[in-house]
Image 1 (cartoon, rainbow, N blue to C red):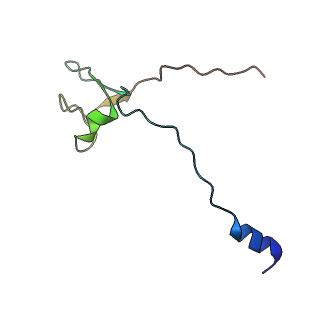
Image 2: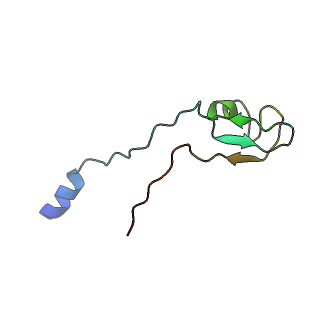
Length: 74
């Protein structure tokens, strides 16, 4: 092996940084007309599959984040 290949093999693995998820934050909303509850990931943990734990509705929408993005000019 050449020196370049040996150096490549000795490098440490790269750690992937992921933002922490607040499991209590409401991020989904049931669109059933009678329910309309906002759900967190903790609410969905106890249910098998993707459905509302309150009414059994199977259509959820993802809520927009509360923070806005800033985009600079070109």
